[in-house]
Length: 114
Image (cartoon, rainbow, N blue to C red; front, side, top):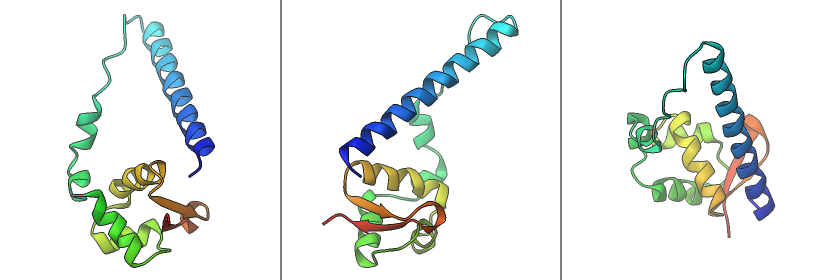
């Protein structure tokens, strides 16, 4: 993932968060409530059992290095982890420029960055 793509992804995520906050504030205002409940900390999200199965990011990287060009479905089957648990790890590795993707949607295949 290039630096520009990383910046675009961060920008989109920031916009998504701002829209969510504004929408929540509008709903709570309309309902006559003072404020939205506090957001759950990221640590809560990381503690889900599905995320614990992927013990170490190197497990994912080594699976991609051993057999480049796998889809996320193939990787999840090989590692015994759900696609939902694997997806954030793959995105993080792409942002760190460890893994690259080719293709779109369900046809996306992952390769190690050389």
